[in-house]
Length: 242
Length: 318
Image (tube, rainbow over all chains, first blue to last red; front, side, top):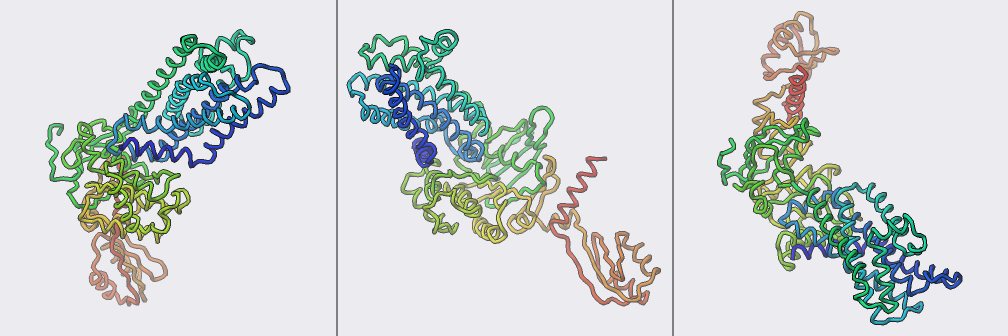
């Protein structure tokens, strides 16, 4: 119950901040509109709504890195975390309280993108919904990355490093350009990270692939999720140890 | 010292408590303190003296490099989980959840300390009234003034009804009116809770604390009640006299009795650890000097504190 109370507070900090909600929810919606309108003028498969929706979802998760990092670093620097650390809370209470609120936020991002996609022309099939299951590990990966940043860096540093991560996801996820076509270093780096795998898997499912066909992508994404969550927990515990 | 039994009769007890950062920075050096239950105890010291570090060790936020500390007999390192149930802390910085309202902040802290929702809400209502936050209880704390935020922060420390309360510079940055209001609230807690408060406002320590300790450069340099410190450690009394017909001869006679003397336009200022008006007056009158005005200045805690800190600097430089 203590953990849920703290998670509830963190959730309120998220949705009561207009910048978080507008960037996290408004921007992905805007991006779908913008890029599909580009796609209607430029004959590129990448900008059809089927291809774009999973891409924008993964890209919108990059903001979750910033939001989760910022929440944690502000608490660290404001002494609010000190107050909580002096309270009878366990490590697991903290970790869940800083991770859990971003899950409904990520789900909301997915829903917003989905609704906008449907409005533009995305067919709501079982495949579309199944593809979204691939997104959950990516969301958790980003939450873990946010915990790492929020634990290790100052508020100013989080802004800088977080921006770099958004650029990395933008460039190397295959959201806006076909990594396989570009090849070389771009492809190598992109497929060493989980984001391109998540987008490929979601797009494949939407285009009729079976769940079994995306096993390798799921393994990549799930492995990164586990590593980033564990690293986030370790970073948090290291920085808050007495 | 390591094996000493930390008695439950004390609310706070430290034995040889030391904190060293890195290899060179000794923030707290061999601190021995005993605070009895129900006492308001103040830790005084300049910036960087080790007050906040001491509180951090007592609140299990950082572990000591050596020595031990206990809260109501429970070791702060080995038994930190139990200690945390007994204490609460209002940190030096205003530590509130900015996007939550005053009442939400209080209920949150109540829940974090294990209260059910109803109890947390009831206590929050009482504390809002006590802290005079009723009008702004539903407003987000980020929209409140500094004084109200500080009162919210202290209320968050009280909601769990802790047996031991730590207030780290509770009135820092407040205007005099808000400070006095907060003093009144803290005074009302006297006897019901053990309070350790750190401050560098001497009048605050003088007003609130049953006993106080002065720490400087991590070391305990003085401990006792305000009166004890003023008597034991000096404080210098000061007497100012306006005179007529003061001669050099009389002045030299006074100076031999009271070396710390100054004269400016027939106004004498005499400083000594113990000053008796009659003694001074006798010397003056025997020389035909007329006293037209006199003022006595008893040592304040400021005098004691500055004297001790200055002595500490001198010893360090020597």
